[in-house]
Image 1 (tube, rainbow, N blue to C red):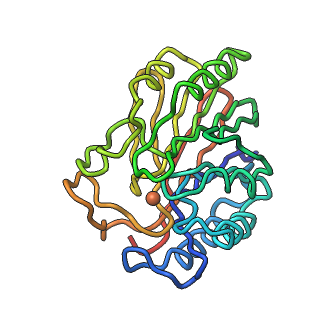
Image 2: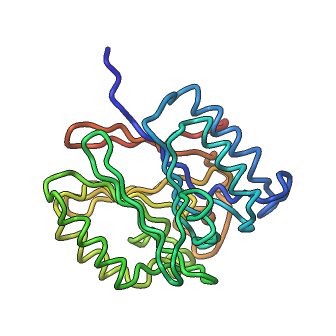
Image 3: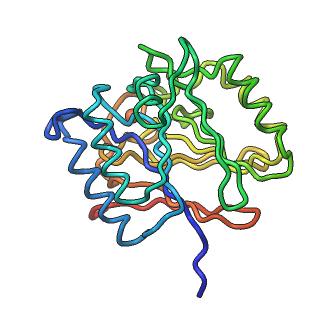
Length: 257
Ligand SMILES: [Fe+2]
């Protein structure tokens, strides 16, 4: 049977220069390794990988370089977008060979399998919350107006919709209403992928699906008032199968739960 093409969303890898360094008492790197090896077994040869931010925990060159080596075990085509723990200009230079001007957002777009992928930069240096900004919204409008019929996937680090956890929902995208106003009136936007929330989330808004990937190393408790670990769910990633005019996503977990 012919296999439909698919891509993988990896998120919130939080690597350090020191492979044994810990965050919230967990070393992110061996956890990422386990997720990558499992994905090589169950989702081999994806079309590409999108890493939706918080790639590094310390912003060091070594952390990005090792992340890139590990993601290359999944696919030679990988796209990285910045999260609140990342250094966007540095990432753009190292991972996309692009020099950003001061305050320029690290925006990316590419076409694959009959779909357009638009990667936004919601990071704001020194802040946990995100912002898209006027300039990037204008850029997004222009991208969506190009070949208006082609179906579109958007990816961004911060959650554009609240996920029902009070502490997380205070650090979303500050100008989310303006972003959603664009997405709500763009019927070709079928899927909006994000990270940041370290948990699986999926919601429909109009004709668009909003979905997150779990973190590769640490899960946040869903529907929580305060920060807390989710001990019930294992690390994971999202695998998205690409159809002619629809996508089907599933979360893959690594571990006994
Ligand atoms: Fe994160």
